[in-house]
Image (cartoon, rainbow, N blue to C red; front, side, top):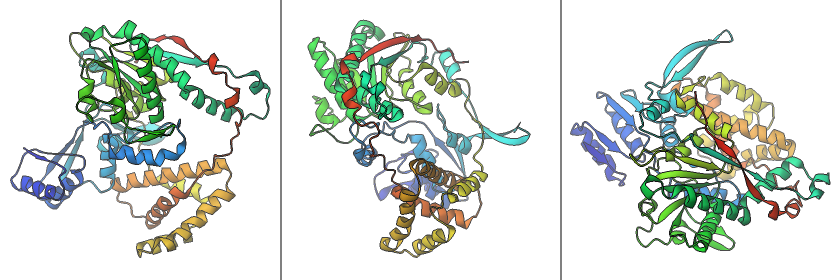
Length: 507
């Protein structure tokens, strides 16, 4: 067995030595994986089995810092985008090159995404509306239902409680025709749910619930996770938790986890300074094992791959969708016999039926309903051309100059002309539609190019053109159609109201 670490120039040498010495098992990190593929591809006479495990790194450090920089202009209460999981990174790596001919790929994951199923799954033909379609099944399935029945994991939906936040608008809002209802509601929720008072109220509910119903569980060692929508929200929650825990003289402490640094009210915060650990200053999992730490407040961190069996309860204050919902809530499902009997979720944001819908595909089986078809690229191409933002001659001209390593001073004016048309000739609905289709074309072409041996020069040219155009497609949403809405909120009327406990039943 050989373990290859990401240690700079020497890793290629270590890989060659391991293969030359006929090591039966080679273990490497996600960073070393591309180098391993290259070495294996160069040894075409040998055959390899590539086993990819879903041992998620818990999304820390550089990637988050870069993402935070991109999101810096979204406002302090903007919801942070989710980081790519290990599965996403693996798909991206494989997507960047053809699968090697002398390798067989085996992937293990509890929540495979469509791309993963199409890459690793077994195709199955079926007839729909008189046409033959292709679906992709997992090669082997150990279902969530079976794992729960055999007591390897716990059912995190058995005790799922939702809270519906009620608040009222001052009468002038209802009677004022100048308010744009859709914009007003969106802005209202962002303000109310992110307001320090609202977070303080929810923090009290969480802490009181823990002291009343959770602290004695798992032999008196039960811990909780608070899932927040953004770093700013996590910072607010940490302040609220520290203040209320001190007020009630609780012996328990809260940890906050987020990547990079964030400025809030003129001060710069990072998790190290906010947690002020006595030791292991940068190691949250080690500190969270200590008995006094019972609350882990996270912002797009430790929602995948984090393995802490003492986690019993999760408080959710963020929109959870599809696979993300399953992965996040599954942080609770680790068994801890004989003391861990069940789990509990208190959700301030999502509806029970939405969470059930997210879990349904993974409970007994996971099937991708339909394969990605090259025809989708033709459809997207036709749809994009109807916007008349660019034409074929412009795309070919850009690609020719790009292939000749032209300077950005030559390339940018070509792209800028399309960006100008996008900004001034399309209304906001068309801008949104065009940008969605651009992203879809880039994503679909990148994926299909690694699976199919089609050669369409214009698609390749268009991919490069749109890749450079996308960052310049800025949708201006600065016009505040809900101006004045903040002044119309009566924060004293904010009270979280219990909707009821759901025992979700999955078929």
